[in-house]
Image 1 (cartoon, rainbow, N blue to C red):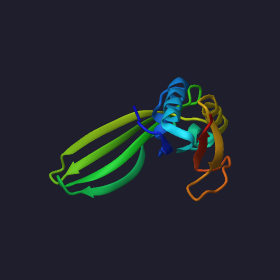
Image 2 (image 1 turned 120 degrees about the horizontal axis):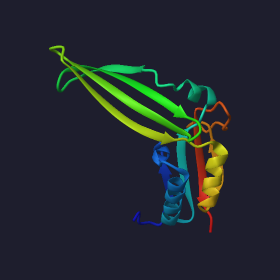
Image 3 (image 1 turned 180 degrees about the vertical axis):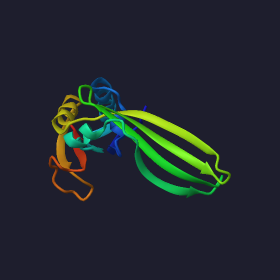
Image 4 (image 1 turned 45 degrees about the vertical axis):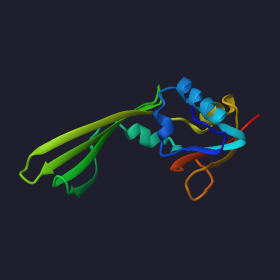
Length: 161
């Protein structure tokens, strides 16, 4: 139970994409709709699928960044692997953390997850089917118009009665 009714709800930073299929995505949208007041707004922020970028997600190991950890003292290197399955619209991601202690001991931690990405018109159809009316679509957090080369797909929709 989400309580409510609320005037505004949001799901950011690809959180919506952790729902594994359209059925789960639609169920979540309807659940959020039920928690909104009439005319309430829902904002969804996900990455904008890019065909070339998805094609390059072939499982290769990519360095992300490194930093010094204080407790316990260690040098941490973060890598990731990504594999895209266009047929199911799933990106399988592994975040790999290598911690090298002061004595040279190595500890590796792997955190994996799947993201089921959505295309713009698919997202609009899901929103419509869940009882939302699209209000705006942006390509970034500066409010730029959405285009095929936008970094983000930010949808704002209102609860329909």
